[in-house]
Length: 119
Image (cartoon, rainbow, N blue to C red; front, side, top):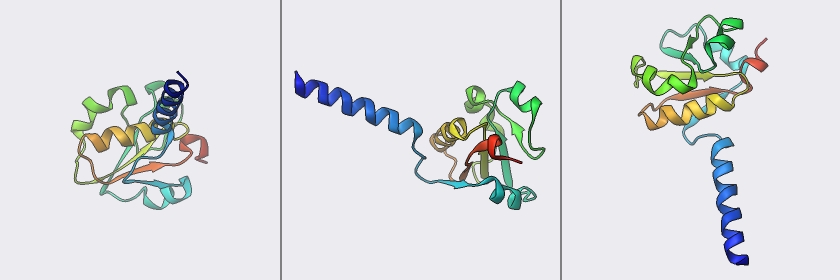
């Protein structure tokens, strides 16, 4: 019984870490670094917050593709070009990066701290 509890605890810890740890193959940049790439026309900028959050405050280069609709809306993005994702804090955009990776995108960048860190 003790062994089973240990296994369940280890599995729970593994799944929790999978959700919060950065994705392999995803680059992470600060909002200061983001300012240096906003004018790059070869980059696709995606904000995965809700439409309400996006309407409240957003960066004009970003397109709103809420996380819960990303799989459907990602068909409008090029898998060959870099995708920079942002959310409010960096958690949803990290999930979005993992989703995009599964959809075949190879060059994905997550903005650390999200809109909370944007000034």
